[in-house]
Amino acid sequence: MNVPAAWYLVLAAVLFAIGVFGLLTRRSALTIFMCIELMLNAINLTYVTFAHSLSDIGGQATVFFVMVVAAAEVTVGLGIVVTVFRRRNSTSVDELHELQG
Amino acid sequence: MIAAAYSLTYISVFVVSALLVLIGALGVISFKNPVHSALSLIMTLFGVALAFLSQSADFLAVMEIIVYAGAIVVLILFVIMFLGVDRKEEVTVEPFVGQRAFAAVGVVVTFAGIIYLMASSHWITGAKSVSTAGQALAGSSQNITQLGTALFTTYLFAFEITAALLMIAVIGAVILARRERFNEEPQGGAQ
Image 1 (cartoon, each protein chain N blue to C red):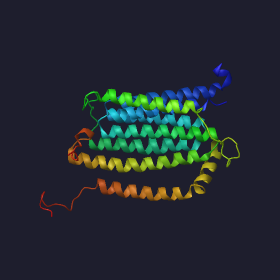
Image 2: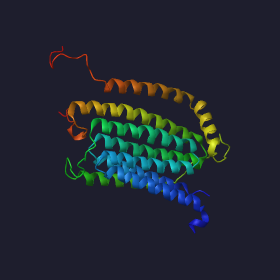
Image 3: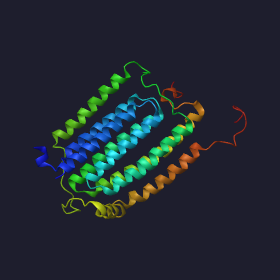
Image 4: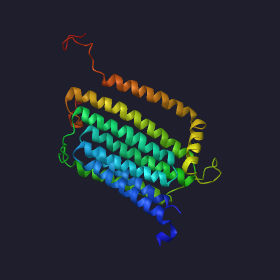
């Protein structure tokens, strides 16, 4: 018999928490992207756990779409990082304060 | 006692995947060199793929390796090396005082809230799906059949829309990353 779904849900919650902490404390835009990937993976794990527990393939289909959106997000996001790097010669988010009043 | 209730195989798979996920995730947020963080992220992705496998999501486990570890992380690594930012980031600096403490408090509150909400609602609620007639999701090759059927029937519109989304993302990335060669006049000269 498989382990209880709660184990995987707690694991996903811990992974999400680690991702949030990295997102809030790291400076480099590239590392922040990786932390967003961590959080997306935590959500994917939750979806798959629910899909398995409730015997509903819809959860897995949603994970498929999350992966597609994550790929699109990384593509555009890294394009923005490259553009910002050309202009500022840095990927640190602390130096992006041009919109500040 | 636990081993009597649950198969030792599944427990070992869970422990291994949890270790891979947690060590990898801690590595992502603590390595100073972004290249090391990206390699650590791959370790996490393998752990998540293992967790997918043990929960009869075989296709998604393979996609996790191919799309995430094979494409997204490689793209991130490519940009890191392209920009030459693979030097150490100062992780101890705090732009404003107490940022780490505030972040830690926020994370703990969020985590405790998630756990409390799930535990107080018995972790999983809701009826079993009627589309699978209460049967467990099939593993191995049956999983691809089930997922493919769902994607091309119930979720067909969303599936087609993702094609448009990917096209928009590719065009956007090309436009963003392109060097502007035609704009040669000096700064301020353009009207």
